[in-house]
Image (tube, rainbow, N blue to C red; front, side, top):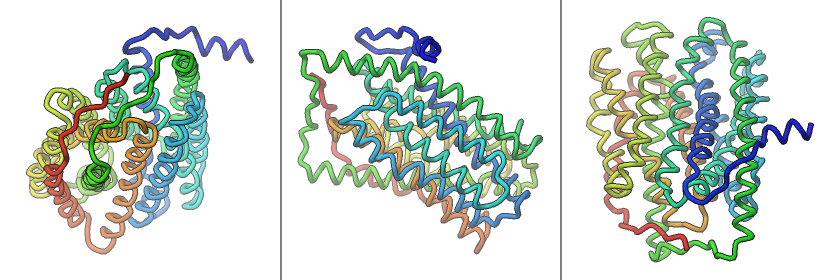
Length: 406
């Protein structure tokens, strides 16, 4: 067993500078993790037909999944800041593997809730520590590292519905077990990454050079106000995205009469645009300033979202792609801006904002599901398109200089 583990660990390179191999590896694991997660909302039309669930029940499934994905993350991140756990990444992926196998054989509402909760716990362990790995591998190029890591997740979110259309829709619920192979691959890769991370941490501890991080030199009240504004930005972005992710397929089916499979391809186009937009946001944030990217991304998406409910099928999909490109550029900028506000608490801040991303997305899905049962899919779609207007408050964010690492 030890010989097998030694082969999996390999002989990683821990030279100084940006560790691109680790960044792309952790980004690929993020892709696999979020691909698995995105299969859950992609299954909603299938589960609704098989079990006769209401929209409120669909929203509750998302709520349970997103809450288990979010509640633990700040605590995991805070603990990781003081006590890094390199191999917790692989352990978290094993939770995801167990949840997938349970979801494949679930025969009722309670079993499905348990399965998505277990998958959510795996995600909650993965994200904060993985974000710290990306920071450690950045070689000081923090925005680049976060963009590579985050675009992996968004790419996985885009691939999930596509694979659902090709695998789950034709072969049914049991085919979700096939995705266990992706979780197993990610768990294996994360053992290797964890070994590199443990060696890197050992070298950092033994180094005579101090690695403490300076503050951002803003008053604490200003920092708190800036963090509160960022939370509102996360709320507006992910309440809107939760409506798109959970109910865009239902909107297209109801309004235009397309098939479930065609609606999944349309959702894939939107989610693929989110992935590309995330990468662009990282580069633009370095060049033009993160505050400007946050403002452009949220408020700049508003004219396009407001037009969405009133277009024909072709332009609805085209506009959804534009919205995805614009609004997705915010998260990397928001997260790096937040870590610049609290540079000594990267794990906690990463866990908090990833947690808010999942938690607010889950609450939004449950809320819009409840509202859809009482009104209509078209009504909630029109309502959600107003949310990017909240981006106007990003104008009150202070201009900050990133903390230097000595």
